[in-house]
Length: 191
Image 1 (tube, one colour):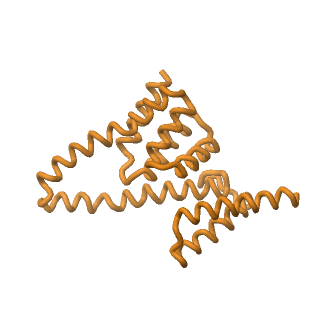
Image 2: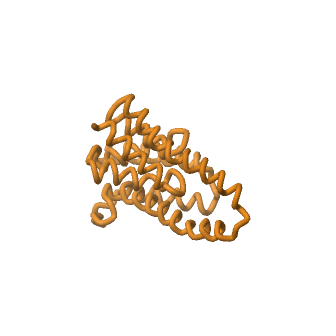
Image 3: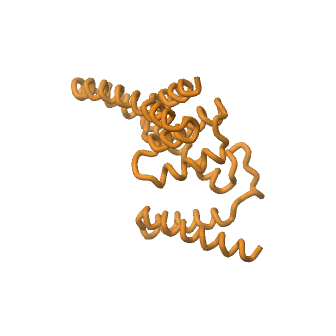
């Protein structure tokens, strides 16, 4: 029963995560954390962090890690298949129809209308990750006094370096990891 629940949850994620892997994060969270309670929000946050750092699409990595965490190898296979199958079928069908009707103006209108929804889904995922990183809570449950200052400082410095100097994302990730390690080691030594 658990395996079927996971499979159908990730079929839904695969069907409705328009806009790429980051758009899938809130959908996965809703299914795994909010609806079924199979993981805590903290566990899910850790899982997303690992999924971002590993090579490959974040939605597939997330499906794989959730499946492994909850149901082992059968969970990996069913969650990953559930995440991939709808996208595969939809892409195959859309590619056929797009190739056939790409010159029709209605197709361009529909694609243009979908762009704001995709941006909203990605912004929602980014906001969720940011709030989890800075406050260890979701947006409605944030208390400003609970801000995690080390993470906030790393975020601000990383954002500044990215915008001002156009630094490599890999350099920012490695630098942030090193800075976090040093700052937490120093704060532990001071406490």
